[in-house]
Image (cartoon, rainbow, N blue to C red; front, side, top):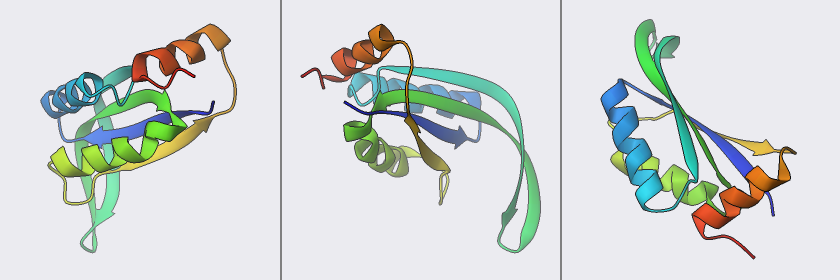
Length: 107
């Protein structure tokens, strides 16, 4: 089984909490960490912009990552939400097995 860490930015803590709750209820992720107050600087429509965002780190299986991306794109308020998937190459095997169990991917 392969595992993924998904990085998602949101405009505020409320939206981060709402997205996290949605992903958890649908068992697309086993766990999320929300970090408020992230300073972001980025290009948008030809301008350099600044904002304060909230950051979500979601843990799931690689099998569920595409579903997470689709769900986030559907419910996120941004026109082009930042959603990046990072493969987890190792870690605590009990924790990784827990991710499988909580997302329903236990084989």
